[in-house]
Length: 40
Image (cartoon, rainbow, N blue to C red):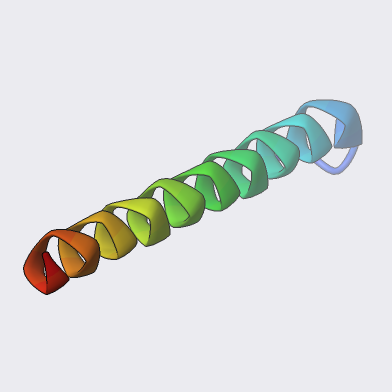
């Protein structure tokens, strides 16, 4: 990424972090749901 354009880079980093955070939360919820089903 060009050094003269830090804003787009920051935007992509924020979107990446947001996507990773949402993905992690969804993954955790799925794991909890599976464990809950296994426990009955």
